[in-house]
Length: 74
Image 1 (cartoon, one colour):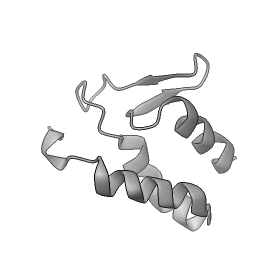
Image 2 (image 1 turned 30 degrees about the vertical axis):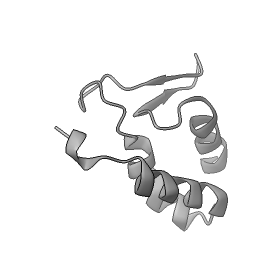
Image 3 (image 1 turned 180 degrees about the vertical axis):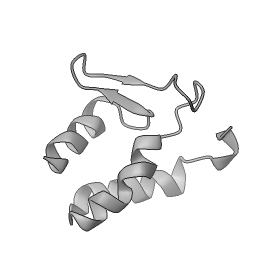
Image 4 (image 1 turned 90 degrees about the vertical axis):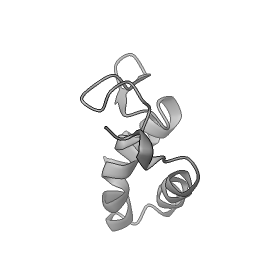
């Protein structure tokens, strides 16, 4: 189930704060403002690691190292 949910996030909303599964779209306007901070990536990387899903763990880690900007956080 974790793999299914995260693979859809990676396919349809990578880098956005949230994934809307029914419409298969991304969403970033929420309590974090309208910036695409990749909150889902930050929030789930430990779960991905514990689930031993190496492909998504490495992809998430690479994104955090290259794209995440903590200065955008409110």
